[in-house]
Length: 105
Image (cartoon, rainbow, N blue to C red):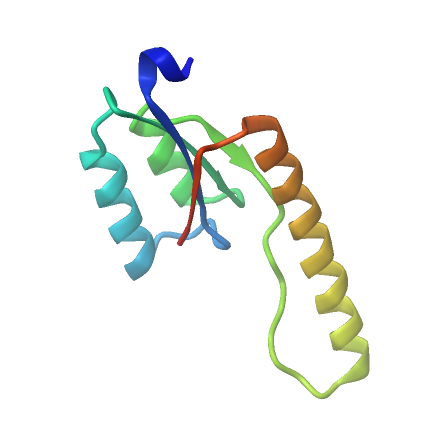
C-alpha cells in the first residue's frame, strides 16, 4: 500500500458539521496530492462526512464529542462519558488504519 500511495494520513474532526475550520480541511483534502498521500477521514456523521466522501476519500464515523465547560456534576459525568467513548472509537480507528501521520482539525 505505502509503496504505491506513499504516506497515509488520518484526518480527524470532532464535528460532523461544516463551518470555518472544516471548510479549510475540505480545501486541504481537495488539493492533497493523491500520488504522494493516502488520506482517510474520521469524524461524526453529518455534512462534513458527506463532502469528504464526494472527494473519494474514505470516511470512518465516530460519535459526536459532547463536552462543554460546566460546574454541574451531572453534566460533568455525561461529558466525561462522551469524551472517553469518542477517544476509544478514535483510538480503534487509528489502530485499524495505521496512519503515518494524524491531522487533528
